[in-house]
Image (cartoon, rainbow, N blue to C red; front, side, top):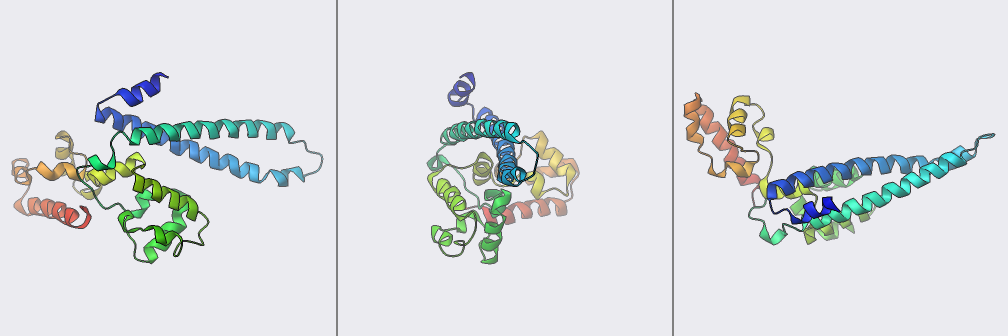
Length: 230
């Protein structure tokens, strides 16, 4: 398959990131479609109870589509896991604390996020396996949440979470109130907070920023690192 050849033989990390993002989007869209189909199937019994209505053809078509979607989902997940292993955890140069909502982003994990936050757990790295058998044991999706966490411990992680672990937040989020500053960073290909490591904040003098502004930008960067960088 030409896609897989490109996927596992391209040595350019930037290209891998693009492929990963595309694959991640496909997985999210597919998962949403699967959930919608599963809801329809779960309601099938109520449709059967309606008199003088034959849903057999619709059911057969729905069942066939669901099987196809499930197989596509399985293959995408396998490729996604393989690609994530291209950059193993041991080779990460930097690591940042990850917010729970980045890791447990799916709607089905809302309850897990809320329970963890209520117990004082704010970041992914603060979770431990025991919480799933104590704090979270009654949650409907506790097993899925546990498996996702165990995969993370093995280094099998969604690309957006892995990117956050390695590079931190995007500068557009942290400096969203300063469009001029963000434009300058964009021109210098600075996208994530880790990219600011070698940035000369004092050079902003050349762009008309006051010393007060420069100090504020630098302080925000230093505060972010103090809180989030491991």
